[in-house]
Length: 338
Ligand code: SF4
Image (cartoon, rainbow, N blue to C red; front, side, top):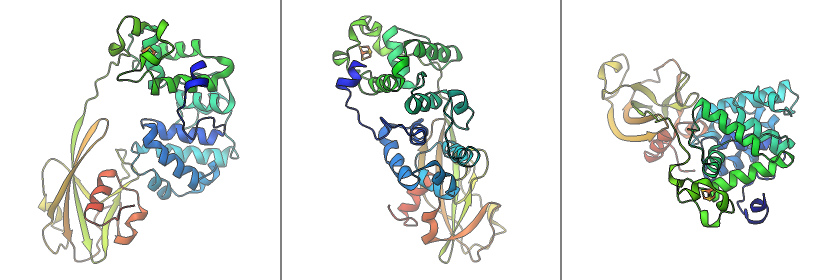
C-alpha cells in the first residue's frame, strides 16, 4: 500500500473509478487482453455507451462491430446479454453484492471481486495473473495456479492477505505491482519493497515461479474463403454456430485441408472458376487459422448459404468480421483503412 500511494504511477482511465458499469466494462475488455490493447476499446465503448442502458439498447451488430479485433467474442456476447438483464430486469442498477454479481453471465470470481471491491469497497480479493505471480514468488508457492487445487489455494491466500478495510486500493496495488515491478520476465527486484521478505528473491527462484500445469494444445484449421462478387455487391454470411467468431461475418466458407473444391460450385452461376488471391494466418489461443481467399465473379445474386446475403461493397464497414478477414478485405480494397 505504501508503494501504491507513493510510487505507483501506472495511470489507466478506469483506476479510481467507482461506477460499477465502467469497472465491469473495463474488466470484461481486459480479460485475456493487455491493458494497452484494451484501452482504446474501453474509451470507444464509454463514448458510444456512457451507461448500461445505452449499451443495452444498442444493436448486436453495432456492439460486435465496436468489439472487432479484441477477439474472444463470447465476452462480447455475454457483455450484451448482461447489459440487457441489468437495464431491463434490474432497472439499470448493478447488483451490489459479490454473490449477486456472480449470477450474471460472463462474470466469474475475478470480475465479481473487482466490481465488489472497486465500486462498493467490499472485502474481496481479485486474483488474476499478476496477483498469482506476486503471491507465488513472495511466499514461494510452487503449486500450479491453473489447477483446481491451485486456484482454491491462491484464492484463499489472496483473501488472507487482503487489506479488508481498503480492498479497492489493496487490489489495485497488488495488480499494479505485478504488472510493473514483479513482471513475468526480468522483474525489477532491486526496486521492489517486498524484496527483503521475498522467498523467490532470497532463494533465486524467480524464473521458476509461478508454476503453470497446462500445456496448450494448438490445432490447425484451414478456412477456404470464397469472395463472391456480383456487380457492386459481395456475398457475406454470419457465423451462427457455436465456434470461434460466433456472430461475426465472413465470406462464403468451406473448411478443410483440401484446396479449391470445384464440385462445391456446380450449382452456382459462376462467370469463371474461383482464383486463389491470397492467404493469411491467425493464431488464437488454441487454434491456428490458415485462411485461403478465392475470388469469383457470379452472374446472379443468388442465395449461396443458409446464413448469408449480398451486401453493397460500401456497406461492408457496417459489419463485424474476424481480424484475418478485415486485414484481407483491406488489402484488396474491399474495406478502407479506418
Ligand atoms: S522481490 Fe522480485 S520476485 Fe519478489 S515480489 Fe519483488 S519483484 Fe517480485
